[in-house]
Length: 179
Image (tube, rainbow, N blue to C red; front, side):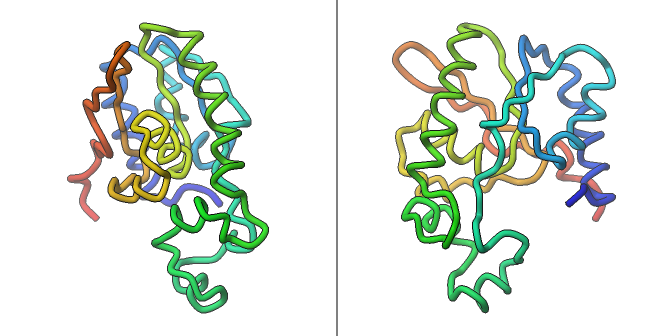
């Protein structure tokens, strides 16, 4: 699946917003829409990306390719409760919460350790962002549904030695874009 025309517009606005910030490192998912979203930002050459396969989106198993209505119809599950389903391992042939965490946590720990005290960008799909928020807050993955993670949004977290500070969660610089 590729970005829609609106997605490309959002990517340009996001790139313009990000261009005024300094990133010491940028890590990204190899997934197509993430890479397409990054194109306008990477054009300025200020930051090189490191693509990490472990930052790919959660495997939705049998739900893959189905919209919310189809998931309800075919599987009897509200797709809006996807974080709970992942956490419980309730998506047939999908990645369980434990498997997802076991993939994301060491990857994020390695990134943070490599760049201690630096500003790091991680570009990924919403599931990965939710898992990272779960890791830094200590909240179960299903509770992260309290945060809406929109396409091309920015969540900015500062890791202090004894606390976590949220500066932005789901900031959408494109929000005023005419629909």
